Image 1 (cartoon, rainbow, N blue to C red):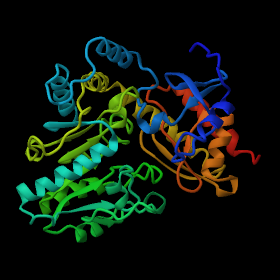
Image 2 (cartoon, one colour):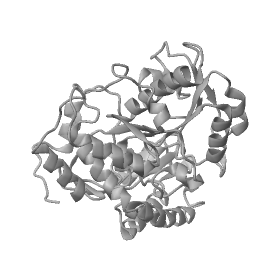
Image 3 (spheres, helix red, strand yellow):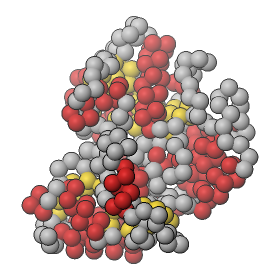
Length: 408
């Protein structure tokens, strides 16, 4: 990376945001100006190893050459038509994404929350048109401690009061059960149930990995009860866990998969509902849409992302480096770490509360050149780009060890 001569300092830029930006985030006090691979650089030229990767939106690192090239090529040709017309990039994107996931059809959208909202609409429409649920009676079963986005409907079935408080009234039709509890799920599903919507691994909750057999159990239960299994793979999918999709660890194929984040390669927002043909065929013209969904630029970048995953290279890297990550974290248990959960290159690390909150630990790591993000309490999340090297990953673990070994 070529260093940047800052027009304003980090402190000045942070202060400039305060009166003009809504305070819906509490970022770490670092102002990123450039990035490449697993590294970012602030406006003063300080370098940091990115161990968050945009909550998995940057699975392939910052400015991956193949993705940047695809975006540049498309920028010179066509960026947007709206879905009022066809474009020459969308069919290939849909064909290859469907094949990658083992499903049939694609509904292209933009953000992850849009994919979830679209998945909810599709599940309800399927319940009325195919299952025969009486009008306006469809229910969807979700898991406690979920994170599916920030729209009003979605926060309405969140169990996080920070996300919910002050935003009601909420959309009815959702039943919340404990995560990783098949008995509770069985009791909640009835003849009105359109779908079970879960994250195969709960990201915001602290990278909570369910027991072996849970996902297979959800698949068996939903098939037996005649409802859809909708897997939110927006954070867990596209290589992050060492497989293309996290459900593949149990050889499960859901009826509907929700994708986002990494699908846009860290360049443009791209999301998708990918499903069995029988499910997505319930949508008819005028019933759902998006001006930017499936735009040519998004389709070009999304196709380049799929092409990277078709080789299997990044899934293998995540699996192999995931062993390095897991072994490194295991060595820290009892030395500042009280527990952790990981799969592939994704980990939730519970820090000894005596050492500080997750936020405080994240700030200390930032000062040592390592960027992570806290979640609840004293838990931090690690989700480096899948392009990180073993040496870089080991260096990051040494930095975590160094920071947790002192109490400044």
